[in-house]
Length: 413
Image: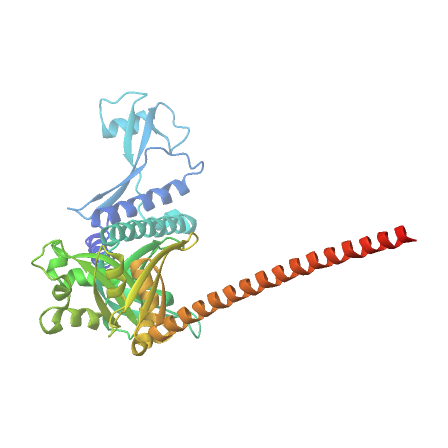
């Protein structure tokens, strides 16, 4: 056997600290690599049962191969003479198979090709171990919120970059589409991210994390609002435009618990913590209601609502609500770029049409005038029709009188 000493154990300990690969697995990889190198040295490469053993107490490693005891050796890699075998075991007989140490005095005897084979096997095994580690880590954290430190920024193009986040034992990748718009990410900053998916496209799979996913809002509220964590307050729905605004609908079956107040906290402490985590993104906490009229009215806050009319006349898009607001509340209800009504529609799953009171009154007046105009047109058409019938009757009478006069004239003649 070859004495390696403590170097192998030191390397195994370092690898366990850095990549979380257990020492026993690493030593097994080394032994497998040495066996692969030995098999490469055998002319026919047909050596079954060969194994490498590492003795942690002595720090020695050796290769052992099964050999059959024969009278005359024809293949030294597979056979051992009876005399040599009896030097090891006196009572051995022909036909028995012994495990014989075949460790070379110098590993350099394996040659360059064998060493390259061993290196490739080691690299492959370590990569597979890393993959399994990442998959296990992902399964444990999937769908949860976690804190990490920005390790580096990978520039993809002038407008795209990936933020690599150190999550402890593994790294997370946050692509451009999962980043907050307008946010500046700096190496060393600690951020809270949502573990989204595992992308197994390259040699080493990547854990994809996000700050733009709406479930991050849910996780943050569960973190800072104990009533949500213990189930007293339930999050019914979330609508989010990352980096700008979020609406969240909450409800509680306990009549003594105010779900909106619980989420906001004393002097707004709880909601301020969530807003700070989301880099000052605006958050509207909405009271959920099973009554669609109340729910839609709440969802359009902070605008005041005059009336809400519900319709089910859109088979393609489903339910529709027509909302009327005071004239001075129209822009507030719609929001900048339609953001408020758009988020309210996502939150409630209703298609929302908003009109001011003057617009609604004008539509009603226009509809009434249109109806009156149509009635007048119908009356005019009826009058014209009646006149046409009278004229037709008059013409027929005149024709009959003419024919009668003509007959009388002919008779006189």
